[in-house]
Image (cartoon, rainbow, N blue to C red):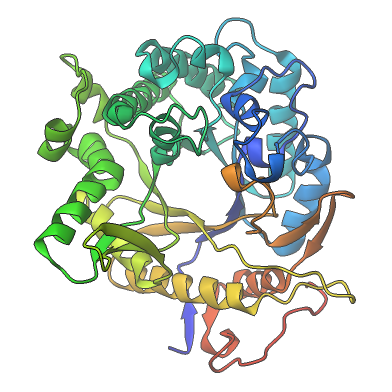
Length: 448
């Protein structure tokens, strides 16, 4: 395709999440979150890993922002740790925790990097979980109060806000033992979703009350859509149920104020009068996380399952699905990336051509969607650096920077140098794709 130049003003960024990078889990008045409790429970996380130190971003954020600046990033997506600001999820404010985020945002602005803030990335304060967590309707009200506080605090500083990141990541913690809080009860699925979306709608209403000027607010939903391998009726039904439960149910809720009938048929949950009006309160943009898709298959015993498929067109299809609800909605690709078996060589490099090829292919689909009329305004590579990957602990590496955890040294991988060139150019060049025209290309040159 030659050169694929993105629109003027397109935002180029990376994304992180508080629990995955900050560390300092018990410093300066921070309260515990469900991920602290979960990771400290033996057998829950790979190799017993925790986010206690993670990437020590709490102490090293200024160094990290210098690295962002070196990369040429124009935006950075982070999340607030709710329990660092409100140790109990409500009540008294922890001023030291709040000060950390003011320093972070001020340093980003000073560096010319647009902050994109997520209010909630799965780390519910443990004190609220002790009261029922997202099964307790009151948690949505606590979230709205927390959101309203941050809107007042950062009015004029932060222009891009997201209410929730990937509600699926919270739901999994109630229907599976693999994520916090590890409830492992599939019947809880829709009640958790409903309270999460209620929290989203209430927060958007608080945002409007706060009169935030030219700031915008949205929600981040992930799309790993299911498609059928053999297209049998059984596979089609399985895929439809999974898509409704994990993707389309959210979109129907926030855009149409309804849930798919299949969710009422499969789950028992309570919706009060007026709830769906709150949930469908209009918002400003759609955050979209896309890493691939799942293929639904039937094994030799007739059992139906699904497997992950690294399929670049999944990005284009996810954008198209969002636009089927609202064709002109501004979209930000808030996460996209891949884990690779990164190896630090003796000469101090990480040669990750496979990741570069992945990013190229998915960005090419973003470009194609823009060419076909999608209002996509930014792209955030996951992630700025290797970090704590939830149940996988530190066994998976997604970063632009390799993190040597014992020393906390950050080392730019080849993909960081590649991404820097993409940002400087404002788009892609087909000659830079490893495995095709750019076979064997290395990007370990000194950063610009």
